[in-house]
Amino acid sequence: MKIGLFPGSFDPITNGHLDVILRAKELFDKLIVGVAVNDSKTSTSMFTVEERQKLLEEVCKGIPKVEILIFDGLLLEAMKKYKAVAVVRGLRAISDFEYEFQMAMMNREICNDYETVFLMASHSYSFVSSRMIKELVRFGGDVSPFVPPVVLEALKKHKHI
Image (cartoon, one colour):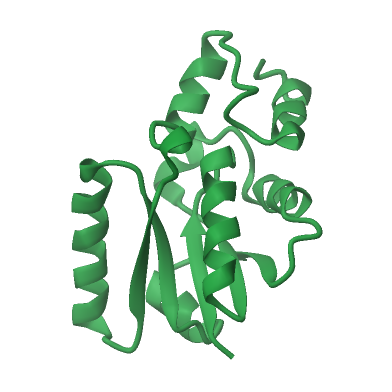
């Protein structure tokens, strides 16, 4: 079974993330969406890791071959634990590529058992990021075109909107 791992903080999940999930699941027998515990982002997080996992489960409900998990530590350890053959990364701009290229090369240097699959963002999501969503929310902007409806409702319940 070929398993792909799409890691991220998903804080919050955007329509761009969902677009990558829907396209990446077609490349593998199973796609694990890994909600990464990232201590450096904890103070700026809108949602807890568990809330993000639940939101992803709700957004991905009914999508075959997709599993949502939380992982902590090195990506390569998660790859080994979940028996993944490739890590999936979405790219929006050249700046994403530079960072992701460095990460992919570092991972390959440490362990060359895994591939990195880059998926270009669909044009309509090439400018959307969780960071921008947080900024829009902070200033009362309308984020409804950029996040799934369940995420919009969660943002409202958390009084972030």
